[in-house]
Image 1 (cartoon, one colour):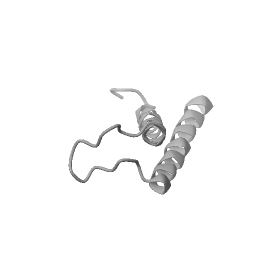
Image 2 (cartoon, rainbow, N blue to C red; image 1 turned 45 degrees about the vertical axis):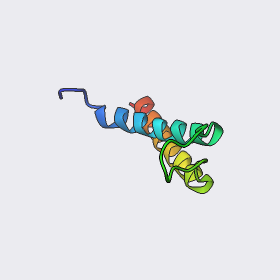
Image 3 (cartoon, rainbow, N blue to C red; image 1 turned 90 degrees about the vertical axis):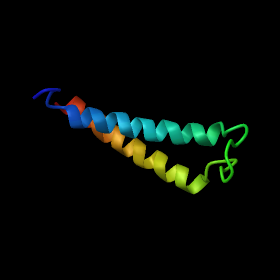
Image 4 (spheres, rainbow, N blue to C red; image 1 turned 120 degrees about the vertical axis):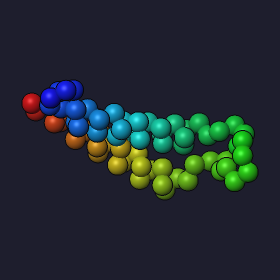
Length: 69
């Protein structure tokens, strides 16, 4: 294969990690000033928590797949 046999697993790890970290940072450090009309001052709590959990599950699954073989 061009990029290796574990390309999909590496992509899931990257996207899951980015989803978890990005939403966590949006909760911890919201934007200081919304730039456009309609921008929220703070990220929605429930949606952010769901995205953090989904991202963590994906990242842990990908790490387990990489460690297993």
